[in-house]
Image 1 (tube, rainbow over the protein chains, first blue to last red):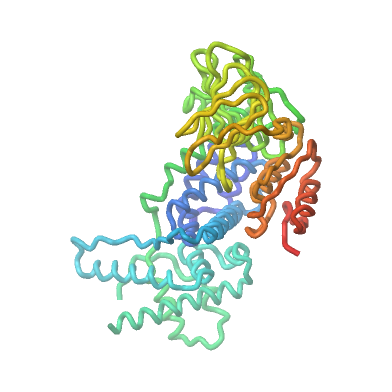
Image 2: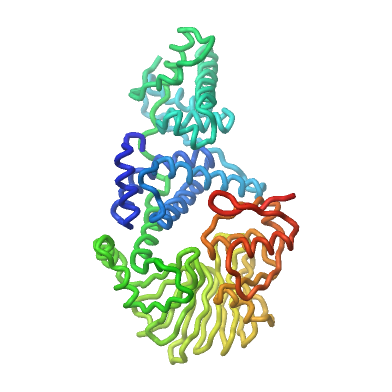
Length: 186
Length: 319
């Protein structure tokens, strides 16, 4: 999603307004992976993230005629994903017996040379260190670093002051740096 | 230190406007930033194909049947005239495609807040659908079978007597009749989702996974989610159960969460309500309601909570 232009989103928005299925299909294909990743930041559950996205896209299609194509469709989509994902989390907490599975894809180390092994290991650690940050900091950081949203977009989405977004990201980087330093000492 | 092929530079705004940061701090942070590998591409298991299939099945269905543009109290929609009515130039192309992709079914979806929709089937039977409902009618309906699927929602069936049994499938039950009128309620995706069948005239057989019950006029049954059995027939005021057809409401010890969803579907509004309220029970009966705040007002007064309008709907809250 990060490389898509605002004009592209505007064109899709206009397409949606006239119930153009082709525009919607393009929009789906261009945005699914990013939005799935974002839903994963919040839910840490790939299946739940897929279910959420199904609801989001269906909702988007249902309200297609009421969308204002001149306002950011991208921001709207992130916003709806966020609302649905947080809702999902709230409902999950209600069923507290449900085990929460951490999502830690294991990396196969076979057939890797040393250098790549180190790199892969480091990335795995990075992911763990990111996971241990407070929720909102992690969300702001990942939106900035991986989804390339601007501070302004993140601020609107998370209902924060842009200054606070910046603080979150800097604190996140400082946290990673500290972890890295002690990792490299060992 | 390994550089991992990062191309995305740190946004300048992150490192400006910070007091007390030295140049070496800054460059350390830039380095951390650059060490994080891109999360490009998607893991193969992110459900994309499944979601795509589900979403576009619905998109095609909605392009075929469209939602009524104008709010009519009870639009009578015949299958063929329906199809023609909504063919606009823009939709025609996609429509052609959708026939190729799913040639066998007619799918009806009633928009939120758009009133009930009545569908006349080719065997002379008719179905009235509540807002938000989805019904699928196979193309060979009326030829060698009379099976329909209520994917989700609430429907009143007036079935023409015939030699072929008329069957309504829901996610947890099959309801079979010969000629009668009855209603089926099956809202999925809400607390204690279960199918409920109520008979107005005639006799109806309801098959759950583990048992079968026979209903006579004035009787209802509900499917037990855990045991997958249909409850023993109970006598109810069946006409009240069908208040929805005239714009009314009937709840009998329903969870407020489900009541709220019903109001959202009827009036196409968004209602925020905390779990502490959603889990309360509510009984209510009204033959006709004009607006969401009318029903919410009654609800709030009955269970002792308050409500207020929000930007796109309402909010229930505790005093």
